[in-house]
Length: 325
Ligand SMILES: NC(=O)c1ccc[n+]([C@@H]2O[C@H](COP(=O)([O-])OP(=O)(O)OC[C@H]3O[C@@H](n4cnc5c(N)ncnc54)[C@H](O)[C@@H]3O)[C@@H](O)[C@H]2O)c1
Image (cartoon, rainbow, N blue to C red; front, side):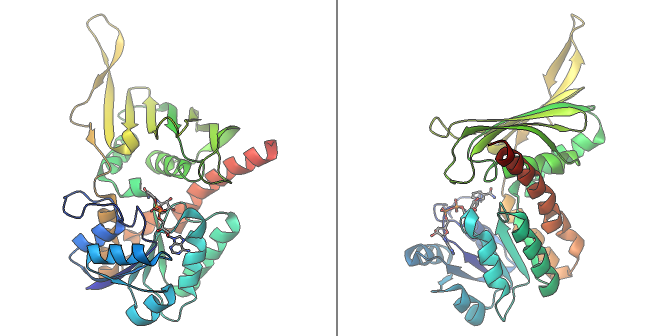
């Protein structure tokens, strides 16, 4: 049995999740439901949060990260702190005498290129693998879309459009990561303009124009005051994929010629359906498979090399914006 620790006991850690239902979106519930995970440890600077989540998950709350590393010695550590504390938390973990085998860190993995270089160096010298929770990569429905796109059935990409909220780095990272992952190509950023502030003071929501090969890409910001949104449309020459409701709703349309000899789209019922089911549970299962077998290839698509491709595109957007303002 593996031991797991969670640093930061807020929403994604499981603070609000109902542990009695079958679906899982949080780290604590995903660990609790995995038969290969035994004891759980929790830390949050708000001691009440750590106590509440440990009570709910049947784990133990600790007063400091250093105590967890000395007394509990976890195999896996989930870093569920706010964006600005991902790097410093991983760095602190890497300075401990006892090292976990895997650090599973929330997105965005870090703030800037210097921090990423340090993470890569710390991973190389420690042997501890760093896995980033770009959650869509762990979703079977998005994995099927990746296979569909690379099969060529829908034809070449024409255009991708995204409506989003919540900061270019904070939320845009999900969009860039999954588009680059599914399309197997890096995105080039052409134009950037300010749309609105996000809850992160240094991370406004930006309108972005770019391209993916010959196809155009647009990200258009939306005010969170109205509501939160993350909708994507991927238009190819012979079909379209619509991913709405934060990836929960997936629709595939295929081009056909109707009775009037017009080119139209028809919904492919079999290829459409729900997404984002139990992504973190899938991630923890993969991590356990890696720990059981030592097979690095299991976790390669979720590691720092891939995160670097994603963050480089994010930083190119940020740098373009800074050079314009
Ligand atoms: N992968 C996804 O789909 C997904 C979804 C939601 C959130 N997230 C990410 O998860 C992270 C946490 O988001 P959240 O919504 O749970 O936030 P949250 O504010 O609900 O929880 C963060 C917790 O971290 C604690 N904390 C603050 N500083 C800390 C520190 N230095 N050390 C330890 N704990 C600290 C806070 O007290 C709080 O309890 C964010 O980086 C966010 O981007 C990812």
